[in-house]
Length: 280
Image (cartoon, rainbow, N blue to C red):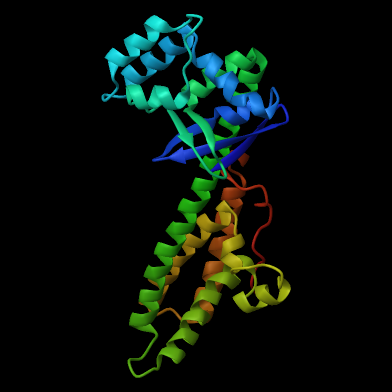
């Protein structure tokens, strides 16, 4: 669930099976008294144009849509005595473009295509602002997805990294507690190379934050970190001493971050503005 604000009206967006549905109830509430929102939706649904739009959308997207029932509603649309609710439309035609929810975020929701069209019934200006804010939401979600993918990539590479530690640096006779110390030590080789501090030092400097230093890395740093993890695993397999690895990784981190910071800002998180400190 997400929220967008359109002309000082907060509108709920639900994602159901990766399909976005926008609250028509919230849209109507922002324009009139809340108690009449359902009436606004019903009045829109009873028009011939709305029925034709909804039916055509269903025919294009819904193989189980009941066309016969749709034709019946279309023939009645616009008549003085014709009244239609969203629930009746869904129940009689097996429509998927509208859904009705109860509870905390209850109300009538519509597929974004239909919600944009309903926006025209409120005002052309409202519709255009709705489309703009919805697109802004999608762009934000894509940026967040990009960050998440990079974070998952870092986790996968870290598994490769820890496997290299296990195979090359941990004698079989060590206890699990001793192995965890080596793992932490190797993780801090990467932390020092990129962030200039260990995980423990970061926690001391940021007592109010949850998680660890890598949870607060930006996209540029996560890309660099993923590369460093692969390189450190390679260096470990080659038997390179830790102090030499640290210096090499730090040099690589500085070089890569310079390249990443020169990329277009749209590809990076806004706080990507510092280079790792050189380790002497």
